[in-house]
Length: 329
Image 1: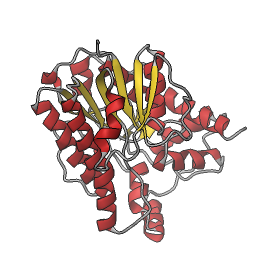
Image 2: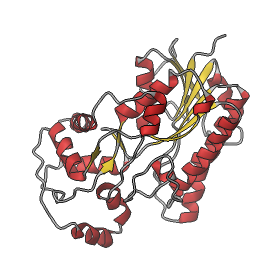
Image 3: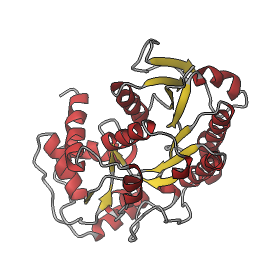
Image 4: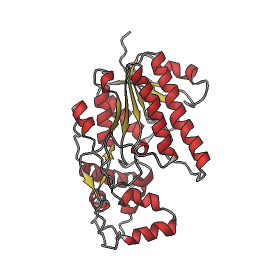
């Protein structure tokens, strides 16, 4: 039987749901590998959609539970993983991140080899190669040692994916910056909530440029890769970002345009944010919104002939509008 299906891990997450919807809309047949079926927006199997409950992908008995999900699979889109945890203990955090992000990737890669799957797409992160702020332009040659347990786990997971490439599989790790979209978590969720208050915000003087990738661009890139004829010579690690770079002032302005609000940005000394970060212990989180982080992802664009359809500013406007709709107003 011809292999014609796309296996997706992590379809319950923000990126997973959007990717599944995009692949189905483009006519792909998908197999969803889920920990549990709760809250999954797709309720029943059909010709285009198969759902397999696999439990913990990092568990030792993963193979017997995962085997059914590999029926007729020609490509794997590995989106499952852990990005946010509550503990501040480094050893505990590292252990949790490595189990969720490295052990699961290794197990899935082993299955890809066993089932002779020709294409493997792994969602990594810029955190594997850079802190969340940098005065240098980040590209595929950047190799700053990760500063967080999450970043270290993503870099280690990329090594597992590279083993597939060494074995002749078309294997790619995508390294996106902060992903924008109404359902995103982390810093983007916090920024949307702040914009939604309508309060004057002290971001008018912040002009440091940052790269982002919209959920629309990210899913469009994954769909494009799934449609490619596998070529293991193109394997590797690729930064993936939208072409525009924006300041936090630009971002809030676009969000509030989507929310049908005026920008209401005040000009304040940038030193104010260092003081706020020191007082609240959130220096890193603040840097992830207001510090510079520009990404050059032209290698991905050139290699795969890819250009995003939706401009980043318009994607952010849509994010703001959708965030308001989801809030019920």
